[in-house]
Image 1 (cartoon, rainbow, N blue to C red):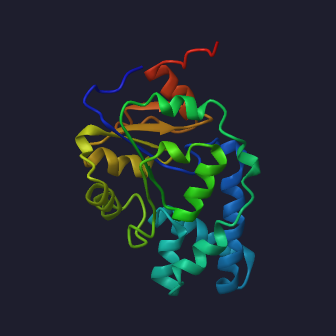
Image 2 (image 1 turned 90 degrees about the horizontal axis):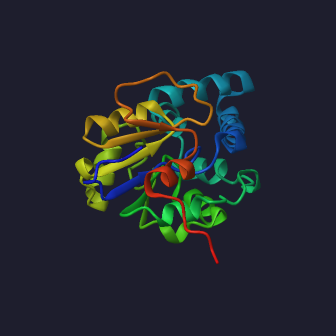
Length: 220
């Protein structure tokens, strides 16, 4: 398994990419999203339906809530991301794998900077990333919108033809592919359908990086 030699920038999604989807942190955040929406919608069933609709349509339920319900984005992200991180463990082997990546490492997330910083610190890898491009930096327009990718490229001097993006969502990788990025789908359970815009698929990020860049040498 290889990546093009020209790649010098490595762009990583955060949630369900740098840690396993099976940790169920995603589900914990969805529960808080539903709680937030329920204050607007009035009942849990409607709230869950709105979350699903907005997430699928816009890539982030926050975008739909701002567009259709005039929600304050800072109120939303302040509430939704206050979750217990202990289920995701401590990222065993991830730091070693990331340290062997020969280039810039960036986080590109539809979450908040605070959430990203909490997760990276919990995983023990915060020091390995140059910058975080979060949804607030993108004016609350998230992936897969091309506008979010334009913000990433402009603010962090990313040449898409020299970059690879790792993400767990096919729509995000489609936009990445369309602007010239190499793409790697993180699919823990191997349930995604094959897609022409995905150049490689891996169950787990550390394993993929170790296959491409080699295992760390054992300590003596």
